[in-house]
Amino acid sequence: MDLWNSIKEGFIPMIGKTVRDVTVPPLIVGDSAFPLRSWLLKPYTNAVLTPQQHYFNYRLSRACMVTEAAYGQLKGREMPSQGSLICLLMKVVERGTGTN
Image (cartoon, rainbow, N blue to C red):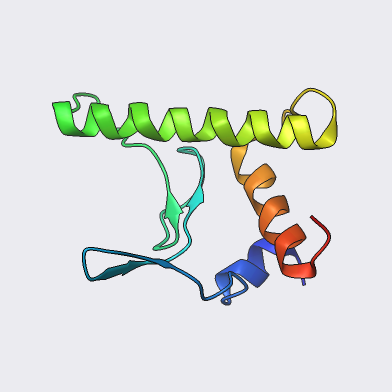
């Protein structure tokens, strides 16, 4: 089974962080090319964004850049062009297998 199907079937570890009495599950940062899922954060793509949507997209973009930079540093080279989702999935797999 490939990684995408594994994640769709619940491969993501059941861990979370409690913030103000709400447990936030692990989320994956992706871009607009991916389908909307409950565990996938992707930017708004409306032609006209509200200020809140614009701010969300900005913060999501920053999260993607941080993730890509961290992955690039871990691998000791520039970030591959496969995108943010792949590098975050690699981190999930590495943590799940204890190879980080």
